[in-house]
Amino acid sequence: MDFTSYLKERDELIQKDTGLRRDYALQQNFSDLEKRADQIVRRIRKEEAETIWDVERDDVANTFPGMAFLTSKSLVMETNIFKLLTKMPKGALLHAHFDATVDPNWVLKQVYKYPAIYSLRVPSTLLPESAYSKDNLFPLTTQSIKYLIPEFSASRSVSPVASEDVKSISDESYERGSWINLVKARENFSAELGGTEGFDEWIISHLSISPKEAYETHSTDTKIWTKFGAAIGTTHGLIAYEPVWKAFLWEFLRSSVEDGVSWIEERLGFPYGQVVVRESTQEEDMAPREIIGMADEVSKSFKEDMKKQGREKEFFGYKVYFFWPLPLHPLRILTEKMEDLMTLCIDLKKEYPHLIAGFDLVGPENAGHPLIHYAELLLNFRKKQAEEGVDIPFIFHAGETVGDGTDTDKNLYDAILLGTKRIGHGFSLIKHPELIKLCRERNICIEMCPISNEILRLTTSMPMHPLPALYNNGVPIALSSDDPSVFGNMGLSYDYFQVLVSSEISGLLTMAEIARDSIRANEEKSIVLRNYDEKWKEFVEFVNKEQFI
Image 1 (cartoon, rainbow, N blue to C red):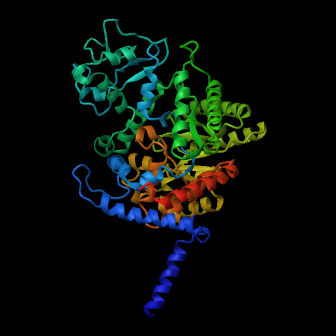
Image 2 (image 1 turned 45 degrees about the vertical axis):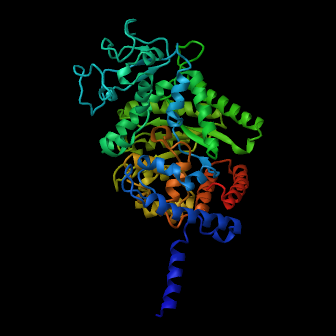
Image 3 (image 1 turned 30 degrees about the horizontal axis):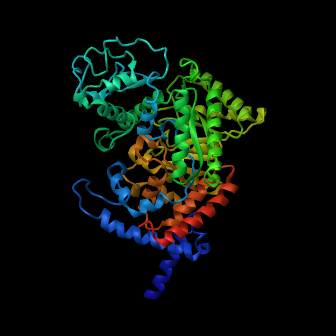
């Protein structure tokens, strides 16, 4: 074989190898303007790989494109690639958890608008890694207070209440477990601990994961998931007041649209996680039906507001999934509770057919019962849906693990056999050639959350993530942020960035196809896709002008 023949065979092999990619068949149909935009982005990516990522720094060690997100976030925001991606239309956000979708700083400012409503307490328990005990915790220091997890309530019916003499939780006379007015506690927070600013920083630290926690102190699966769960739990109390809950959802919709998202579907958990205190009484908790009604009201009002602004083509809809949290209850108790939730889900689907989009099981897969434990219940749920004349698709979390052949890894088999419409995470899917084939043939979209996967210990960086391999095998993928308030990846631009800079094959046109796949994965895709194509053309023209540099 001569060298010319060798090169010909080499090109043919590469073409064959990349032929399954989701964007392969479209390459011949791209316009000259699209191809030029793609070339511009590839050029800038190459330049920034040399000028930003291949540079020794005192503040960030061992930099490279797609490195650990929390360490590199400030560098990411400096890049022209990121600035460009913030302008890119991104289609649909399909995987997010309600309680973790809004910037914690915004949440605190909103809560402080109701000084007479919110109470705070510090429970008697400390974080597991604490070196302190009840006896040596006080007087509080900037170190010891980190191990106190705040708890919030928007109800007037709290007990026990701290003595009037106690001004804040930083007082030595404060009795842990007793409730104190939140604003009062903030205003009287010890100056030695930072005053009001230190108070806010302390709360924020329990609503999010810091770089040190992600990459140093919480170095195991169990530790990082404990911290993650505590952050979600702390948020529950802050948004558990009707006006704040409504404003919270509005802000999530607003910030998502500003980042180029035009369709949103998120997980909303019952019976746990959505305790909302009624504004009229400031005591009674709202029923699940009222909370779903509230979500419907807010999303409709937001859509109408966008129309009034002449921006109706920027937002097309919002839906929610019911989910059952994955507890470790005995199966007898679990069955009773889950059947009640399924009945409620069917009832609310009848009442809000346009809002209820699916059903999921949510939680740390490695810690809960695997899907096979729920299979009979879920099959019966499908039968009951048919009897009641409704269709509530399964959208299962599955394969959020590094395991190979473990019960958690095998959730992928059950998810597909149970007819899941999409798969949340699907991190271990790459180990299953037959399942990859089924996902490709059945168009089972994988809701991939790169930054979440990295921070929660499934991978150390984006270049090690299985997403490119799945994409190369023709599996449809929708990028999602999962729990952005905890991870600091608000919107979708950060996740798109990590994917774009970590692959030499993928370019801007690949990102567009991923965005289109996110739209194709929902029921009302036609009108949203048409609009996306219009927005995409505008964006391509913007890139060609190179005014973002």
